[in-house]
Image 1 (tube, rainbow, N blue to C red):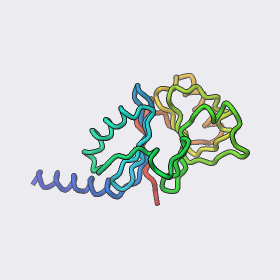
Image 2: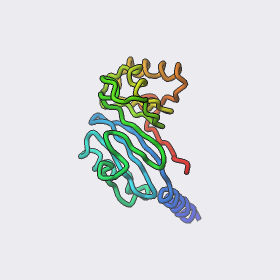
Image 3: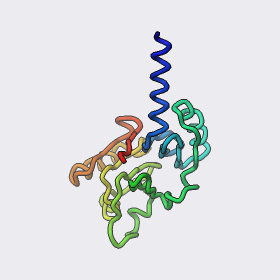
Image 4: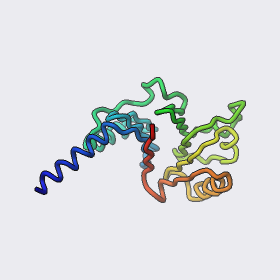
Length: 173
């Protein structure tokens, strides 16, 4: 009886994964990693593609992911911006705060800050207007706290991977 219950739970998880759209953000010492899971396919971004390839094949295969694809090989990812399932996701780069790069701030659903960047958050928020900011564990405690305060002041949701672990966001269609 236990075996049947475990089998049914495993099948339910597999079916859920095959019909799920999620964004996963996690960090390792080698850099920031973002997975865009879409109906059993893992589209990934990493600042270390060798590490990410190993990570995706080892971990996601058990969760019903049928294949992994480098997100840079898709039409919906360009210049650290993704348009995934009608969501805009931006991975911060120095051009977002060192120079004014846009006439009007880009509305984005999720802004991911990682790769040991030291952003001046007020300058970043002149170019990007996120609904959620996710900070990975490579960002120092001082910068993380500075970003947290700015988010609080501007009513932006904040998530720290160092404090809470991997960020998983289920996309609602």
